[in-house]
Image (tube, rainbow, N blue to C red; front, side, top):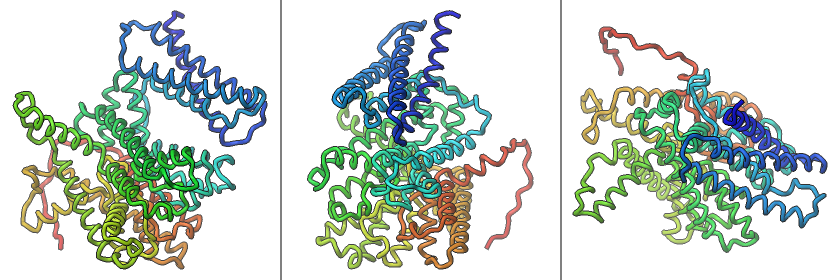
Length: 586
């Protein structure tokens, strides 16, 4: 066996044991283990980290490529420095506590193990065509696997302050992975900091998607993705251009972590003077809520959420949270397209006499135009409705008109699958409840962290209705014609959403007939659209109703249409066409 073959074998072994090390670190954190076993795990962590360093060095020794300072080398250097810093902090704490002390409380070495796992995973080839699963099946099963693993992690003793049933753990994990925010137990008091970190991780994974993580690491650190993988991603995300699939996935990660970092910093500034919280608690609060907001999850580390007395009158915080979840609900491709358009406009303004910066038509594509207009119209409609219906009701606690306007804007924007609330949802008037249900049903934009039928679906349905009323046989907007497949997909999504929601309402009402019907309807719409708002009903659900709501959340997150695609075989298109007949309707 030559040196290169030995290196590849060592690399595969390192990946395997790094996965085992991460699993052991989670168990070590979730359970109170004997001191001798903790010491054994501690030695195992060190062996994994040391072996990873050997493999990283071998990556540059046993290669035929010229050694250059590329992105792989920069990443390896960055992670190596981070691991050294974490190990230094760990051994410093270990020496202070005594070498024979329990090591379960030291998190630095566990973080170092996780960084090692990420580095080794990034060096592993990922090829979706190796699997026998259809891309839609892979997508669904990946989410399902994360939900089940998350439920088991949340049931660990050190993750909660009291025992958690499997149904409640499954509900919480589903709500986190599906970025919904509905809770059956109080996140602030029922879960420890370790449990809240697990929830935060599930939210981040659910917001971005499993395939995004794996594909990005494969591309960024190995230099490319196979054509089959790109085709699978394109099919699952309905992106027809093969060339921009990987660049889009790269942009997803850039935009997500950049926005979350900025949001966390701004949140920290807005709560710096909060009493009874030290700097580390404020930092954790900021990071948790930045991730929860951008991913449109709606989870909070406060029992009352944003309605807490120390938060609901903090108007700068409301604006920061609102802009973060609106940004996350815009859709990754839309955000990237808008940023590219704004950069082009700025360059043309600065270099107006430079021929290299000439006008580029349709830089802001039709998807972005429809999404921006629909989003703005829905936000304005929601704001006007809340201000009219709630001005002297739930907004009465806010003194000035400006304060009412900010709270009204937050209340109008949060049904767009965000799930945060700064007012008592149980005190809303009936017209506001109906308006909220309508906004929840529409939800966020395509390829975003939010749910619902999506703004583009609603816009296409509305444009189709207007074109029929005008006697037109095609949908035209912005001097473009909407493809028939988009119209068919939109109406499939609409009727499937109503089917799932209606089935959920029927099952819950049958199991618990004593519940208020409008609250059940509100809960099911909120679950399907992964919103997380509730009329104070979630805690009153039976175990059967919790399972029903969990299924609705999962179906709403992965889309019923995707489930049908996963279950039904694709029929090959045949080269013939039957005579066209018009069906009598209305």
